[in-house]
Amino acid sequence: MGGEANEGVRLLWEPPAKPSRGPKPALSLERIAAAGVEIADAEGLGAVSMQKVAGLLDFTKMSLYRYVPGKAELVALMVEAAVGEPPPAVDRPGWREQLKDWARQLARLFTEHPWLLDATVGPRVMGPKELGWLERVVAALDGHGLTGPERMDAAVLLAGHVRGIAEQARAARPDGSPETELLAVLGPLVRRHADRFPALAAAMSAQDGRDQALDFGLERILDGLEALIARRTG
Amino acid sequence: MGGEANEGVRLLWEPPAKPSRGPKPALSLERIAAAGVEIADAEGLGAVSMQKVAGLLDFTKMSLYRYVPGKAELVALMVEAAVGEPPPAVDRPGWREQLKDWARQLARLFTEHPWLLDATVGPRVMGPKELGWLERVVAALDGHGLTGPERMDAAVLLAGHVRGIAEQARAARPDGSPETELLAVLGPLVRRHADRFPALAAAMSAQDGRDQALDFGLERILDGLEALIARRTG
DNA sequence: AATTAACTGTGTCCATGGGACGCTATTTAG
DNA sequence: CTAAATAGCGTCCCATGGACACAGTTAATT
Image (cartoon, rainbow over all chains, first blue to last red; front, side):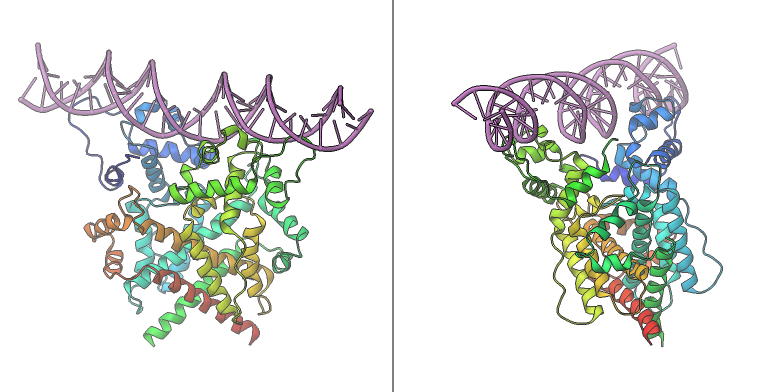
């Protein structure tokens, strides 16, 4: 319980100020985070343990604690490493294109690192890179008559949608994981209990490409924002 | 790894068919799930262990395994118990009011059981109650010109938004938890690096009630859906 | 009523996980 | 050259999820 949140903040926001005396560190936060990401990409966040990360680097578990206060901070570093610098603003001018591009980039991120979904639940301190992403989307909405909180709310709305879609996409993926692909089990379940879930049974009858869901919600959100912006500026 | 997903499905979807011979079970899935929910409500999902749940019921850890194949299934039962029967459709007629009410109810659920946010990440089998909630929202959209997949996508969109808001609300809550309330740490951070996050710094300058965020996104989504429906039916 | 099969609750054991602590080796400021 | 500071490591502890075998209990069958 004594995680001392301040430590985590410093680790994410301030370069670790290399010491003058003593042996040279053989590791670095970057290498440690990269090793964690590698494991998480391959086997999921659950497979990331101090042991495994250290093992991948040919060090012992306890060595890592010279660099990282605890596992929570390791995961935070992994998130920053995986998120990376926010993609440069696309040169197309409209806010709508900007947001659409941003959402697609974010979706790609969740596809490449599905464990980000697990690593970014719950109260946590965001790092500069993650905040950079947020900055990008809020900036894209500048100067269209929305208030500050409204711009933030719009960002949360967009991010929440992408998250939801990514989660659903992950569940549907075969993955090689022992999870009998969820759709394969949920579909028959709904059909077997069609009396209790008539609307679901009807809605699930048609099959279509999965990527539709991202764009569908995206267009709805953008339409809604456009309506508000028109009301404000017109 | 041998979780045998089928077991979990049966546990959620088929009543456990009480045996004819042998001693009467002193416990029940309901009591076990309730105990788990009690602990999670009080101390978070991380505090839920077989030991603690069993201890709360004055049983030993291993007794639970007579009822539940493993911890994953325990959590699934807890989710079903916490989610409860979907709220009855409100009697106001419009789909818009229906969806608004549904979203608010879901938000209330996440407020009362914040650990639901942790328990409902990642691929998992949904129980009948959870599917009942989904059914409600899909049903509300019946007969307005949307295709089946579109209705599903709309549901995911709405649920994703509520989730995102709930997550953000939880992070802002003081909680008594040792987490230095995130906003209190993130605000100054953004302000200190205002050069790197100009849009964020500007957007965060104004403070307002937190509940705005839920309704803001909700109205945007509903506006977007309304535009689509108008296009389809008009 | 006696037998027996099925079932319940439990005690013991193991592997894995995060983390505390102290020791030794190394490097550089003075 | 010496001493302070720091790096990596070995050992220990505790909590957790779970396997497994065992003894007590109950009801269907004989």
